[in-house]
Length: 251
Image (cartoon, rainbow, N blue to C red):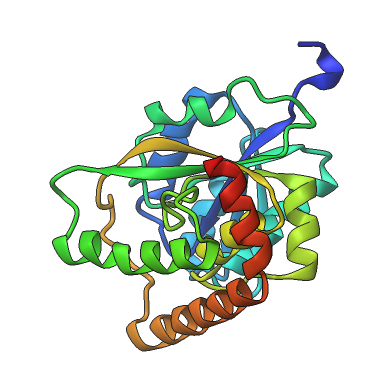
């Protein structure tokens, strides 16, 4: 592959109060030999200090949001910084260390600068996964499959995703896909609707180093319910096109 066609990639890590885990996460990600964009999503003073120390490394770029806005907003901020730096792709990885770094190289291998493929991680859980979380994921899976009339998006909730920067920034300029956890599922659905290519890759998951969860039961469930309603209504508006594409794949 010529130098001009090589992808320019960074790892994008959104962080909100994962002071105890984020340093270990970055140490494990070093095997990728890629620069890192850390997005501080309004963390407390302790975590902000940890991030400041990590950002002293030449390979780490710190983006700071003044207040906590949510994972979707943090990822969009990281994508904007990636565009400013002329990067072609970013690999989103959660800060809490739950993803096995040894499974990540296939997400970035063989990429060309002009490759517009959304690579989605699907989890291979170990025994640490809480059973209620494991089974409740299938509610979201089922609603995503309904919204796309397809099983192409194997798992939209996994925190490992490879984004083509320019194409995803165009999408979120039109459809922001939510500021919080709903971003993880809404973006892949809208990507699928516009005919974007998708690849699903396995990644081992363990529950997490610091045990911190930022899921707020009432707020986030309401946001997710509204998101799924939007997507199902959007599917109905796109029904002829989605059925036609489904028929083409089956023929």
